[in-house]
Amino acid sequence: MKVIFEEYSGIIITAVAILALIAVAGLLLAADGPVHTAFVDLIDKLFNQAKVS
Image (cartoon, rainbow, N blue to C red; front, side, top):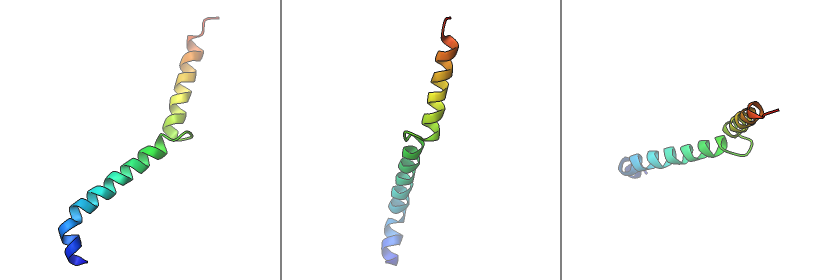
């Protein structure tokens, strides 16, 4: 086991980091995520201010 981690520790760390970034991006961009919610609010405000009465 020690030999495996000595040989492949860089690859293992890289793979875990990439998976973590994908998971965080997926959570942020989910349908009810904070980025999605902020973007929808921004678009709503833009269209509400741009309406010509």
